[in-house]
Image 1 (cartoon, rainbow, N blue to C red):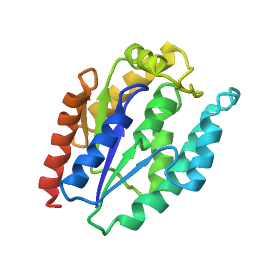
Image 2: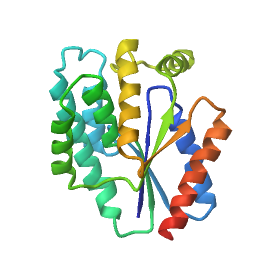
Image 3: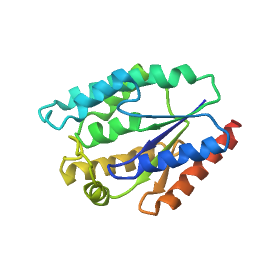
Image 4: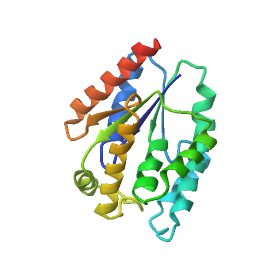
Length: 210
């Protein structure tokens, strides 16, 4: 199994590129499982609705962290762990780095505490590769607002200062994990971003001899 995660601020284009990557890898003959966080399983999707409900403005930051971790644990045991001995490529739209960026750095919670909890609950499961879609928050949020029929969730409606902290947090996480996290320029065209992501994944496949 290869476990790959896509990370980045709102409006970075992760989901669009993820669909393109899935189709290309399937054409290449690989078995691909696409999932997302929070979500990816029935229970996790129910927790997602609570987390992102725009009416839940009074949610305590640590409650938010623990809900994300609960959803991620369920996602892990249903989607990732059962495939650990397979030849599948599992790609998740977000994983544990999102909690560090959004709840740790943006909400100014204790990073060490979050890391300790996540390591305990996730049994040290880490992606083989994390691709960080790099885009300035003001550009990403503008993309969201321009999308037709886009429903804003609770995090989309946070202040630009919050999203800047998320962006800065991701940069720090990338610096601290240079072997796992690779940054792609999400300001480029979908095709160019796809090509960069595809190259990173193919390099990993070659390295791991999948």
